[in-house]
Image (cartoon, rainbow, N blue to C red):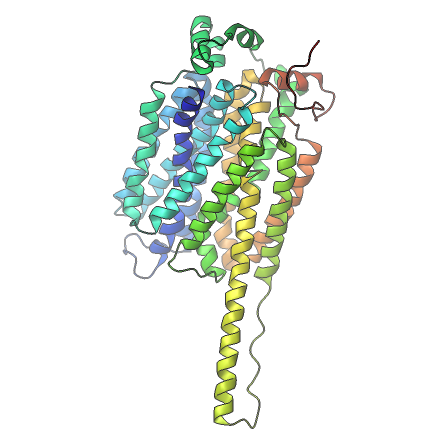
Length: 479
């Protein structure tokens, strides 16, 4: 039952992943000379179409700050289907640019709502023994959504891509109707019996719910309490993690993936095969992260993730800054036949060199996304839902998502202009520096939460001794 509830919720993340990368296959259509004159985009319009999703996600995060505690986590997730469906209808039937932009903004609103609500819902219904693996599910299904978009983009026109995007949200609403609310949410409303019924449904009829229910602390929050370390430390950690997650450049890379590959001379036929390869790699790496989350721990995966992203982004920086030497002049006093042979050999070698050089940005991008998707992708979502104070989790998660997507909006909007002015070298250099900051922040500030209940994690912050939980991953020790 727990797995069914998680699956029902993360369908919203499938839609999130799908809508996030929707611009990747359709932007080349809108920016081509053959585009519909009413829908043709210049650099500025393309920048807005790619980035306005992030602005909508920030607005959705703000809305979730209110809705999470006003109507509950489950209903907040269900409400996200409204802007999602309207947004896809506008894009699918677009006859002017404003319809594309408004539709993309609304799908972003839905993405922000799900990003703030789904991790909280999953963490609050999950047993601590599987919370790490289940906490990876939002990222896994988001990757599935992106991969579905890339695959459909090979054969389906852009309007039908928008129509197909409406299906997961509608299925999610139907399934969530039959799922329970968060037991912690029900306890905060004073509905003890309903909370017990929900927990028994999630854990099984033979499960002793009293122990887990008695461990759940439900209390009020005042503004003065926010000034104490046990509240502001986990909130700051979560906000900075979401900020750094976006500053790695993952959103503009995914949003403009096909355009980046075109500029990097990555050529796989037919088009979008390279993007589909990246989608498969993301799926594999998130699956690896899910299998290791409760074994290796969060911090070990974050270290590995930071190092892989650093090496890949540094390679992309160097590669984008290196230009091939121009061919030298033909040697004097050569015969026509000799020159023709020399010319053919030069062309062959140059084509071979370009083909090999074209693989460097593809492989580096694959490594970057592999690293991100096995660490800073899923773990940031999971840790946000783990370390935030229970009493402020609904509002604080909305704040984290808002900061995250405002950062993504500014970076995604600036990315196109940076590339036009300086080439890919400038943004790749920025991403390399950020990866170093991610490594340092993980070493100094991020706690290890593996094997801890949400209440234990909150108690840890309440002690204020250090940021690292020094406890082995074990079951209950004998007294």
